Image (cartoon, rainbow over all chains, first blue to last red; front, side, top):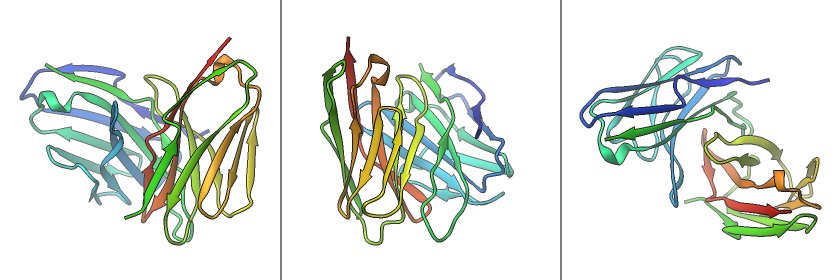
Length: 115
Length: 108
């Protein structure tokens, strides 16, 4: 079974704080992703990574950065949290297959509230 | 740009009342279509992958089918535990493009 874990289920932070969200997968997947999910807006991709030390911007990277120092771990960083970053954050991982699509496996999510 | 559209947005069913959800897409060279189930407050759970028109996959009361332009998720004789949001997605150069989802509520 694929297992994707996220460091916290619920997190409350103050405006201006630096926030770290951690994600770990145990299936040796090459690709890892960070999404946020908001009512009425669906899943939106923030950043993704194809390999260690590689990162690619998704659709909404502003206000976020990422770090991938090890294959199994992908961190999302909010440099200075703002109230509009209150959201559900979801991490996912997938194998890398060039010739066809590849399903992503999601973690349980972190509900972040910025006050 | 590739588009993924799901309908209806919401569906309310009586227990045992079968129905279908639709996922239509506009992509060139489909490289797979994925269905997920998401319970409130949780991450999406992978259900099926379909790769070619005519393909079908089944899991308990769920059956997914694929044509050249759309996919259907059929729910046969649903139970209250089938209540969830169902998402479909298509690959987009290493990423997944998700539809907005169909929220299904099954009442006893």
